[in-house]
Length: 181
Image (cartoon, rainbow, N blue to C red):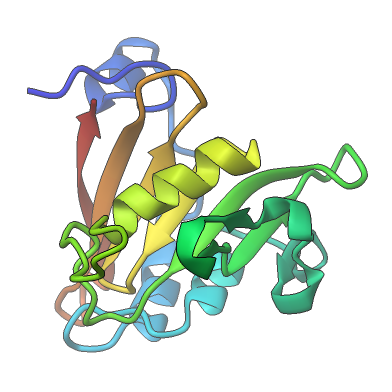
């Protein structure tokens, strides 16, 4: 059984704290359904960030807008780079979350056959988070959305959700699990 710490909070602890969801859940389900294919895949991750997480375009860096300081250079000329980086709205030049995106066919927990480093996409993303100094990230292949916490010198943790398409009356929803190492 997972023992969440810090970043991940259980539904029972939210209930005990009398925390109430104030988001427009029904509206979000309709939007999620609109960007999710029948097979439960979100192909446009940028739309997910904008429409579901409500990240403004001004705060999201991508491509050449991502500073070189957020790249991690490995032996063998491999470079770990986030697809998107979320800027702090309060502090100029500070990034608070990185996003890693893979094709929907990529298993985030399957090791590569690269002889130099047979790491999974998840392990590589943890390395990116630790070494870039931005310890929180979202890793996705469009089927799985994984919130990852990987501080330098401490045990990493993650919470994984899958997007599934429901009937027309119920829209779409997330189901998830938590893993802490």
